[in-house]
Amino acid sequence: MNLMIRPKQIRLKLSKEKFQHCQKLSQESAHIWNTVKNFFWRTYRKKGIWLSESAMKRYITGQFALHSQSIQAVIEKFYDNLKATRSLRKDNPNIRYPYKNKNWYCVHWKKSAIQVSGHYIYLSNGKGRRGMVFKLPVYLANCQPNCVELIWRNGYWLSLTFDVEGKQQILGFNTAAVDMGEIHAITITDGNEAAVISGRQLRSVKQNRNKRVAQIQRMQSRCVKKSRRWLRFQAVKSKVLAECHRRTKDLNHKITRIAVSWCIEHNIEKLIVGDVTGIAQNTNNEKRLNRKNRQKVSQWEFYKQRQYLEYKCSEVGIETVLEPENGTSRTCPKCGNQYKPKGRNYHCPACNLKIHRDVVGAVNIRTKHLTGVLNGNDNFKSPTVKYLRINDQRSLKSSSVAGVNRREKHKFRLHRRSLGVSTQLTLF
Image (cartoon, rainbow, N blue to C red; front, side, top):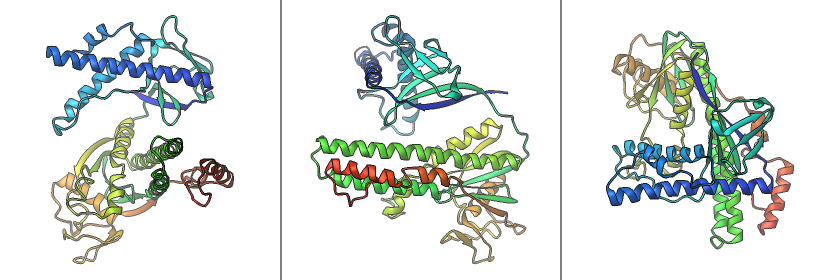
């Protein structure tokens, strides 16, 4: 079996002393980034030399209060950023190379600076410097991570990366297509059967986030910027955004996992994914969508879902191919008639075909990839449609994103009183 990289993230509960130590390490890592950036651009400006990564590692050494491998990791990330920016500038020349100074940056430890003993992990900061010791969960006892990162996500988290054995490769023989949507996250079909995976739970999390953030910003707009009350509201807003980010990430993983499980069950060898890149661009100038729909489309995480789908498929040996979606949603798969549907169902006025509109898109994406044209097929038979949703009501009820129980309401009411805010307002 092939080896796969698998990350695990742990939320840290730190004492005041450890929290301050983590802050100093993050500031030192940011200082390394700023030094590397300034030295690189000064050399390029004065000498006209694009300094190589190996040369930078020779110059920047032994000057900072971190492990030597941690210093090299920051340099490697800077050059990865340069490489990514150079490739992106081929399509968009306005994208800038890294130029801003950082106040905080993640701290990276490589394998040589990591020691694990039972439920504890020791991270070295170099000879003569105090290292960091954290307690690991039970399921990570005596683990052997390749690298560890200290990151900030509205609190400090420890991100560990492991090499794990890949899953068993399936030997499929069918071809399926995926139509991605904002309401129904993924619609997948192999020509005979189809599955429509609902994304309404994901939408509800985003709607809840938008309302909560809007209310916080309205109250924040009455405060003097950077005042004590303004900063308190900013902290509340950061907490809301961090919670919603974790929730949407979890739901995206669950949605794509359902899709891959369906592929395994139906012996899929190749998965054609509809490419909707650029769907949210110029919607206002072209008058394509109203204000509410523009917000929904701009917050639609189709690229992240596609990334999750691709790497989950690669684990089990399913090939993924992109196919443009032009004309797939309005073309009748039976007679080839062009008709823009209204609502969630497609009803062709020419041949009286009735089918779910997202299933039409998935069927046409598959046909377009296999034949290259969309002319319709008189022998077309509607696939059997099965509707799937994330069975996560338990976690939804316990999540502060979806709702707040009585104890939390009382806690937040006290918090609003401490801020001098009316208890009639519903921030959460």
